[in-house]
Amino acid sequence: MPHLAVNDIHANYGKLAVLHGIDFKVDRGEVVSLVGPSGSGKSTVLRALVGLTPVTAGSVEVDGTSIDYAAPRAVKAARDRMAIVFQQYNLFQNMTVLRNVSLAPTKVKGRKRAEVEAEAMDLLKLVGMDHKAHAYPDELSGGQQQRVAIARALALKPEILLLDEVTSALDPELVNEVLDAIRRLASEGMTMLLVSHEMAFVREVSSKVVFMDAGKVVEAGPPAAIFDTPKSDRARDFFGKVLR
Amino acid sequence: MDYNFQFNVVWRNFDELLSGAWLTLQLGVFAFTCGCLIGLVGAACLSFAPRPIRWLVQAFVIFITNTPALIQIYFLYFGLPEFGIRWSNEACVLIGLTLNAGAYLTMILRAGFLSVRATEMEAGETMGMSLPQRIRYIVVPHIAKSIYPALANFFIVILVMGTSVGAVIGVDELTGQAINLSTVNYRWLEYFTVVALMYVVLTFIASIGLALLGRWAFRVKARIF
Image 1: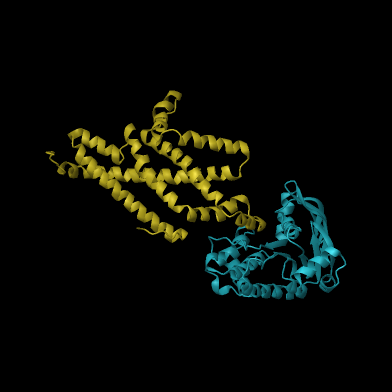
Image 2: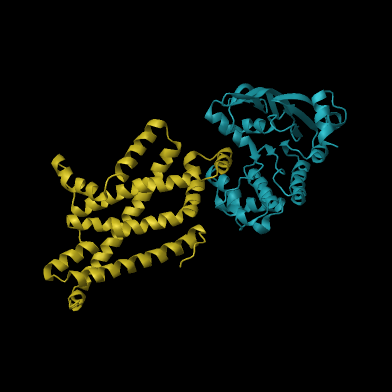
């Protein structure tokens, strides 16, 4: 049974249809990447999975349990199992790094603050940010903020981590520190779904690549097949431009 | 000018002026604090509530901000008894000022709600935080920091301009005391000179207190002077 199964989901922004039936599966411990041109709906897939963009048709299953996005309870359940990291980090600006990471586990899950903070420090250590635990986000570089955002998502103990172009807003020299953190998670067996334009990285960490265009999956398969011998014209054209 | 200032009359009754200043401070702090709570609820409603509730809040704000505080307080003090509701003059000032402050603060705090980064709210939402939790942990700290100077200024407005309205219905706050005392011995000029200075000292102390509080609690990097 796949850890995450996305079956023919559709989504709209207002009247504009942005996803026209997306299908893919992610196995436990697997890293799957969504790639494709801007506006192809990659980020929308992630937003739909955490209930930020309404799913109008189709189904999503986690561990074989279907999630009904029309029901608030089910959306809450989905958010319990999946955590998202955003392109712009979206840290809470008026809280320290440590509080950013420990807020939701204490307030949403009602856990003890001391225990959560100890865990938060471990997570910050994992992403190499423990030395900045008491700094505020505006005192950090983009790469540092993004690593904190990853720790914050992990603090919720998600089964599946969704990463939405997490390096796109970063200076080139800060990209690697974030990619290293993701590599470490992958090696620890975290199931991840990632949207990225870092093709070399996608190729290295993913076991499967899903190529999307105009709200549809054009083709999917192992990275080598998708990058080196794409079957569709659209994918060939796209990779011809970005991999040169 | 051959006016002969006689401040010794004022010093003799200085205790009463001080008690007036104390009442002024109490009225100001109470009206501002309760006004903030009303304003917070009002601003939250304007930002998130369904349309009928938004209209209701908007009507409240328009009604209060477009009529003088004096008339509102007159209405409470002289109007309500006609309907069998009798409040003391102090209660009328307190309630009138609180409602007045609540309406203005609704609009001031609304600016704070509008300036919260939508993405932070989204992040909170995906982390499972409820709307009240997001308001409490994301919006309020943001407001406290970003519009703290506007809030502090408004507190001074209430403290000086708001509370002195109480004098007209016989509340013995600072202006009221000055009127009472000077009516006895006609030393208007002396009393009001001293009272004006007392207001300046009061607001001066309040401003420093607020600036320090802002720095300490909300990381507001405002200069004190």
